[in-house]
Length: 346
Image 1 (cartoon, rainbow, N blue to C red):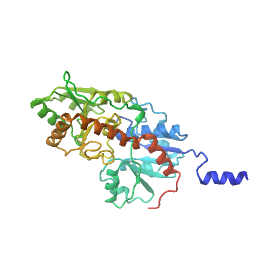
Image 2: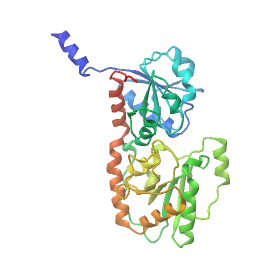
Image 3: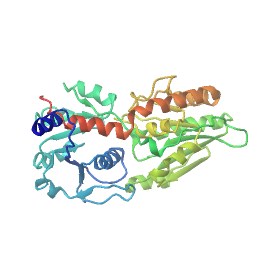
């Protein structure tokens, strides 16, 4: 009888199965793709699994309290892994040479490297968003939807949507100036034009510069609108920053999953954004306002929100409700279920 019970527990996953998981990353600096695995790694560890980051320099991140180990690539040949994730094709030799039962490309940005990945029959593909799923289909891939996420526990929803008369209207945007795909210039130009037209605007930008180019661009930055650049904001205090703002704007040109839009929505902050990385989050006039990637469209949508407090509140609250579907914990459970199932045949 005990053997029968043990068999059925195994079949129906009632027995705890601990896995040894890992990811190959280019670095442990504050990038969206890196943050994804720091968040997921900690949750996998909470769930009873092991999780290791493999990188060229094996530096423990100083911006995130990562609970797992960080090792050099050499350890990939000796560590016994149930599954190894990676996000960049340039590390394919390290991935294929690893002592791993399953190799999984977690597709997080819509670039052409997926064309090479599609040719590898022994590599599975996960997609971080609907944007990426649609992109992968162009290459004949039916990627597993591992969509998300955001740590809702770290974000407090906004409750006051009034603008007041004795303070500026705060417009918040991600200020990674060194990456043109973020579209910071479009947000700046939109706010400058609104300011010239008499709107009491103050632009809030935030970033943690991670490269010499980023630091140089920051030192050279100027704007013809009152602004404040928030630097090196601890991620566990991002909620305070988002709650300072009245409107969040994202003008990305390409993205897999927009972390900052998800974080803004977790704070019930009304959002104006392009469709890049937001197809699971942004539904026009329901959870936010969709804009084109130009200063005119951004300016028009910001103005629309400034003039309508009820709309700001409705979009903010709806955005918060929708983003609750994409908490990191829910995503980790979904990926765990995928890993406990047989690998798909391609």
